[in-house]
Image 1: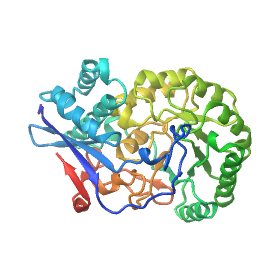
Image 2 (image 1 turned 60 degrees about the vertical axis):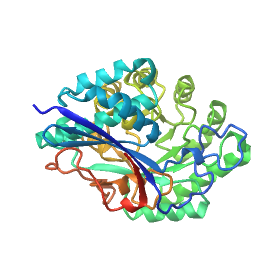
Image 3 (image 1 turned 180 degrees about the vertical axis):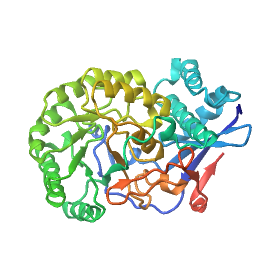
Image 4 (image 1 turned 135 degrees about the vertical axis):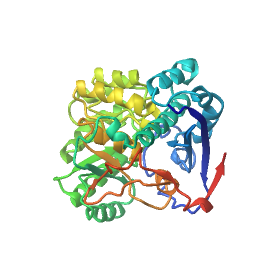
Amino acid sequence: MTKIKSVRARLWKWTGPTVPPKGQFCTNASDLLWEKGDAMSSFRFHQWMTCEVETEDGTVGIGNAALAPSLVKTAVDEVYGPLVIGEDPFDYAYIWEKMYRKTHAWGRKGVGMTAISAIDIAIWDLMGKLTGKPVFKLLGGRTKEKIPVYYSKLYADDVDVMQAEAAEAQKNGYTGYKMRFGCGPKDGMAGMRENLKRVEAVREVIGYDVDLMLECYMGWNLDYTKRMLPKLAKYEPRWLEEPVIADDVEGYRELNAMGIVPISGGEHEFSVIGCKDLIATKAVSVLQYDTNRVGGITAAQKINAIAEAFQVPVIPHAGQMHNYHLTMANANCMISEYFPVFDVEIGNELFYYIFDGDPEATDGYLQLDDDLPGLGITISDRHLADFEIEE
């Protein structure tokens, strides 16, 4: 069997045109601070990292990372890449444990786990190409005819702008819509009214026959969320996402136990055990791990099994091909998050500028090809002029 001969990490820095979003397009964890300027600026990411794992026969698997990509590239180049060279890619469980355990003292959260995720995703793409099978077939196969997706680009803005965007998105028949809140605890009762005004406005457009998801991105606190939940209930949200900071697991548990609105989270968890704790303590009603952060596809499948045993649905954070393959192969992953192709704004859009092959949603669904090996993506050369690439 062919062995891994190289691991290549590249940093892609976007230098092309951008569309600046409204300053407070979403609440965030730094909102509670006294801060000048745009509090959300540090949460935009106009860089990405690609990770190419190549075997002796020239087959290349592609992984990626969007969190702190320059730091993750250094970790891949100096630590994690050398650990996997010479290994059989089909020993993926051993490779994962080797990366995880040899760096456990410092790498089990954040940058270290993101580096593991990028390499692991590339190894699964590699295994698919070596066997001539799509990744979802290696994970268990097709559990649904096609994947329903929800529209996930309703950033906080003026009411008329959000309504116009929701109305335009309706033309594609999405099964749900996710909007962001622009106000939090520092904005007081007036901010609460502004938040509620926008939820009501979006519901006016999309009606009550489709799901509406509400995103806080860790920008609220426990007290504020407890005050908001009863006010939000009449709009029948599918979930309230990341209301408090990721470390406040007890806060999640208390909010979820109120039973008013289902609480979702897990995007900023970095381990199988961490996700198990969110599930077992009933801290979330919906788990949203990020495959790019939680340890890649190998770890994600373990988490999926735990969640299914507790009957907690899993909706992996963000769109992107690795998440679509996981969703297709797991009955407990019912829907996928979906960002439409758009000009570069926050950073989620860069996936479409770096890679070719991501499926486009049609009538609210997307499809994966049974005959396309691996993840089904390639690194594009269409936008190279708009990137500064660091090897």
